[in-house]
Length: 175
Image 1 (cartoon, rainbow, N blue to C red):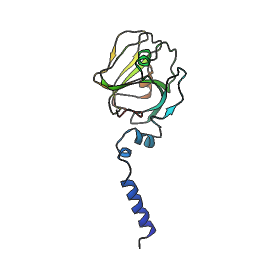
Image 2 (cartoon, helix red, strand yellow):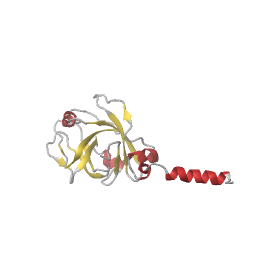
Image 3 (cartoon, helix red, strand yellow):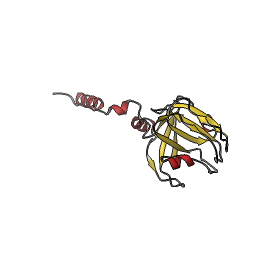
Image 4 (tube, helix red, strand yellow):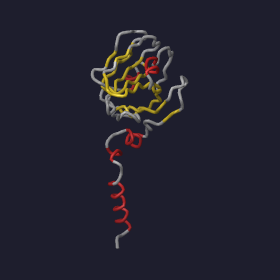
């Protein structure tokens, strides 16, 4: 007869061995439990009546949570953060694309400076266009195809230590 200690150890091995592979491969599901940041969680709609979710950035040193508005439709993406006069440090806007593409953004009709964070498939940051100048019509483009662009308050990426190669986590970033 097996002792209770051995039975517990066997059960623990069985449960660990049968857990979902997603829990071990660095995707958004494992990021939720590992970081304590509930990446992808639905939040109440924004004041602009846009859907919001929790997004987390893993800098390698810490996990930074944000409430981001989703610019899902072409109309929402065309408007973006135009005409907004402020953006809190824990807020942002995410522009997810249906497929990878080279992304190019400008600041026409955008009142506040923004950091434009270009996100590759899988969630790593490809590049950051820091402190994009309000009203400027010069394009800010990714250097390669990306799956999304995240806009944060201008200068926030540098202040928080967010850099190319860091990981952005949200529910759909494994498209």
